[in-house]
Amino acid sequence: MTSARLAIFAFLLCSQLHAATYKPYPEANVTTDQWQEYFDIIVTEFGDTRDEIPEARLVLFTDEASSTFYAFTLDDHPAHPAWITRRLVEQDGAIAIQQIGFFAGEEQAFADLFDDYLALSDQLSQDNARQEESSE
Image 1 (cartoon, rainbow, N blue to C red):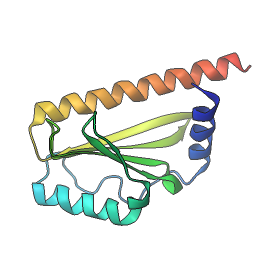
Image 2: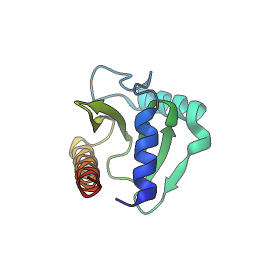
Image 3: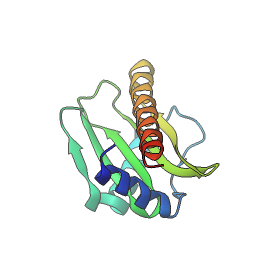
């Protein structure tokens, strides 16, 4: 992990750790209207952090105060409409990434997206652990 990414990781960890909107619905399978409603809430609250990633067919938002990150599918994403929410938490003195997701589209495409984000979280955790080991 680069020192800049590690610094961002540390900054986010020191922030408040819980987002009020982390789990807006009790079930992962939501309606298209629920997807749109939640997307609109996130745009209203965090629209100034919007980062569209056309090659991934995602739009990202960040809540720095709660160390929470939102990835919404764009219209041409196979899992659309869906989103993944991840947040950094301190767990047993280490940084952990909690992840939740919701979908109103095709379930297998959503599962693939969810798994991709789990793998990314795992890689970030491994990179962070290696960085900590090398600095000791």
